[in-house]
Length: 362
Image 1 (tube, rainbow, N blue to C red):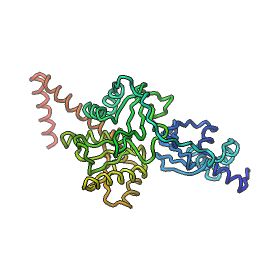
Image 2: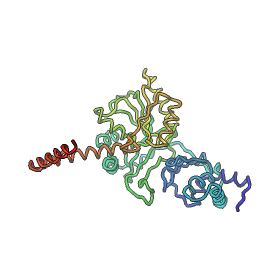
Image 3: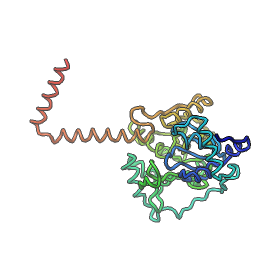
Image 4: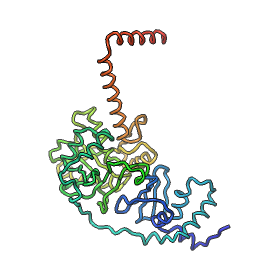
């Protein structure tokens, strides 16, 4: 049986997760200045600066290559805990992965490269993807493009621009979403999804309710992705003409406390200068274990923060809910159309059939 010294265990614990994953053939893609995600499981997030990982879908996390191999790589093996430890130790020590403290990504100030934008300022591919596949209304897409928070790059990818809420002329980062399906390259998700290199920490994609006329919104809603934020706003049009008013919609690109804290602070400061105050704050994060735990952590410190939970019946996030709503709309429209074109004799037959059914139920 293999035996390891304390020094070897310490070395395996501190070995670089990124280097080990690459040596083990675990495909990763860089999605941010200090972030990698798994290709096979895109809920796997690795932070090199902390040499840590979080596997969101299974609520598993740890530090160092030994923990990563044990909890992620060997998670579905039939080995017992001791056997997993021994196998993981052997794999990490023979992988050649260096110390995780050495593996650092150099951070530079974010620079917005305007040359990547579509030369004619078109958003045809983005429009088609967001409307046809994500269920977002044409009015909302056009409004976001007009407000210069949504753009298309030369490859047809959607760019969600992180505008500084205090100076909307400054771009602090970009969330990029692909519009072409490629499962071989992007795993189960099928599309490119990443944060532009050197995007500023503490910022995210955000937009304000239309018609604010330069004023700062008194309400904030936080989401896990730009598309969820947009979907929530689009759904609000069902109840409020033109969509939810006096509100700032913020994407955290995950569950990031630093983005939550940053936008609360920035918005409160803006409102104070205008002689107003922040009224409500709510989290529209996913209806899953990770999202619920995030809500609990935030509410433990800020009891007034509410949870705008997506419907249990319609999906785990707000885009799922929006798409389900669109399908229901389509179903109703088709039903009305069918009723219109049915001959009178057929309508009478159906009515009689329904009456018989009601009589049987009695």
